[in-house]
Every structure is written in C-alpha cells, then in structure tokens.
Image 1 (spheres, rainbow, N blue to C red):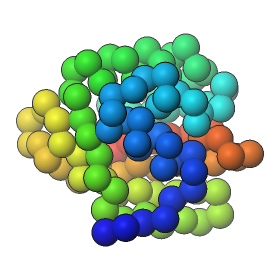
Image 2: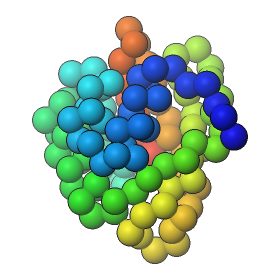
Image 3: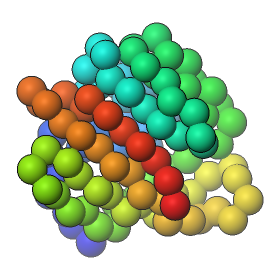
Image 4: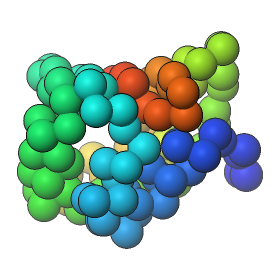
Length: 109
C-alpha cells in the first residue's frame, strides 16, 4: 500500500529502514518525547540513546501498511520485521507533529 505521509515521517521511516541513527534523529524536535517498551525518553540525547540501543538489538525495518491523520496526530500501522520473537508483527506508531518536526512518538501493539 502506498501511503502519503508528511515529510518528517517519510524521512524517519526511510532512515529507520537504513539503520541510519543520525538521519532518524533529524525529524525530531529537540524536546521531543518517545515512549516505547514502557519507557519514556525526552530530548535529543535520550532519543538518540534509545535509537542506538533498539537499532543494535532489533535491526528492524518497517513497511508502512496504513496511516490515519487527525490534525497533527498520525497513527501509522507498520509491518515490522527484525530480530525479535514474533517477527514480523504489526506495530502502531503514534506521532504528533508541530512545525514540521516530530514532537512525540509512542510505539505499541
């Protein structure tokens, strides 16, 4: 399925699939938050640490399967493949955007 995403989300998923940490971080606001695996990270340094750890551990790629928008809030269903039990699996990425930046990301089932 081809889904038209805003540029920050397109850039994030493209970088994620290349495992390019620097490029993954670019679309995020400096004070953004990420919630994943029950933990919340705030700010660029904490988000970079999360990206480095999860990229090394899971080596995931994401195929965007569906997307819905409500204002600046986007819910993405992605088919995630990588080094984890149950791969591939569908995960949901809930983004909030502001000023062409990702200000919040929450990942869950």
